[in-house]
Image (cartoon, rainbow, N blue to C red; front, side, top):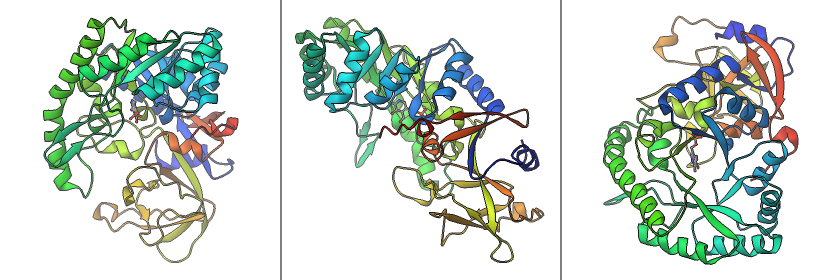
Length: 401
Ligand SMILES: Cc1ncc(COP(=O)(O)O)c(C=O)c1O
């Protein structure tokens, strides 16, 4: 969809707004299913943060099964919204939130809490016992790889060997009120790190090599942990792995029973820089041009929606349409206004888009779900027209983290 089509479809809408292009969302969902090659995909809520969008995806294919949540309170909220099969992928020490999950479990909902240490198990078990329920848990294993001088991966679980996993399993098995139902191993360094990032030539050369070496090590580690747990008596219902950027390798791991995917659905600009896939920009936001401070410049109202993680200019939103505009490096995407200037890139030499007062400018967020923390609703576009709106978590008054 080009700028003129978006501009026409957004006429009369109040700006700023966040939008989802439903045609692109569907195409991305189909491309993800194709890459998953028949393996079930758990939908990652943190990268969507709208109940309606999560439901749309779950309804799109029977291979989208269950939700990967980021907070116990969120899982309870999603259960109240009619969703089930909820895996909370991050441990919590919040007694009140765990109590709410245990109560939901008692009422028949399927919610699994994450553990990676005895402290998590002790807390969940003591609460589950009080509530009078058998609370399912999932064990997260560390999927980072270490090379001399390089920690390649994310800092999550301390469990990286079969022996450590079996020790924690024994702690779980001793408790009457918790049972181990799953294992999760998220290889963030494969799933979330691109290899064609502009301005990072050295890193782009090293990353494919590090990934190639890591994948067989990780497959062996995940497989060995799963086997050891099963030998120790664990009856696992699922083994979850991967993310948007690792579908191809994770689905080849024989110990994995389901993938986790979120960002690929909206495809924020962080996911433009992978050599082996390209999804369509299905979500973004539109700001209005509110002032014209000088030749070649247009200043938009709003826009400072910087993404989390290691700090760098790449965490800024990107002007998307009309083509040929970039952020002003002195001001970036600002707290209440965002100046744009004409790009000096030769490829835009003949682009003569002029922006006028009130025109919309479309931007893409760096990350997927964080966009929804800035807007109450998403404007839904299909076949070049606004067809509906839906609420984000924020629009439902929810902010979990
Ligand atoms: C446990 C886990 N699985 C999967 C993912 C991948 O999500 P996405 O597809 O949005 O990159 C994440 C993201 O951080 C995660 O924490």
